[in-house]
Image (tube, rainbow, N blue to C red; front, side, top):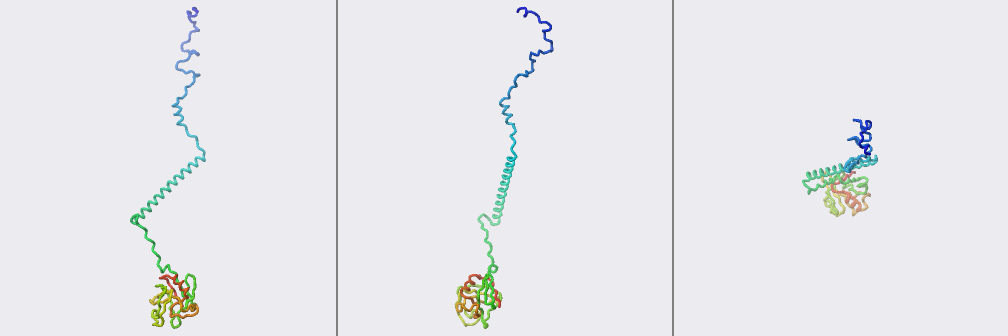
Length: 236
């Protein structure tokens, strides 16, 4: 044993300068068989936070796009409604003079334009109103009924009529119901009235002193439908 320690190594046993022993590790060079250290927990967390999300299916993408469009449309519609309401309020306040102002009611149509027209045919002894025809009795030969356009100027549930009121002196003085008073262009008065004293005359004979006489029921019907201002045309 002492001989081995004390002897000098031979020339072939000495390492050659600059040539590495394959069994000796080279300083600064890693052993390929050594395991690579694992990433630290912080590196793994950092790497995980940057991971890209999984791609969505086409149907899901379309649904989200539709939902976004609907939300935009709803927001636009709501904004437009608010703008219109604000504009309306501003115009109302400006025109009405404040929030307590009330709009003026629409103007009522004139009686003349809204009134139904009646036509009296003396030859046929009829009065036509609202599509209905009723029989009449007109003035006798001695006291003919005037013709032309006349206007309703008054209505009387009961009116005292005298011959003087129609320019006939003092020949009669009676009270009759459902009287419609007419005026022609010359300002003279004419009447549509109920012939309570001769219910059978209308449609059969002319026996008045110029008035247009009707049966009581027909006279009331005409009275209720002819307003003041209505035009009545009388033709022979």
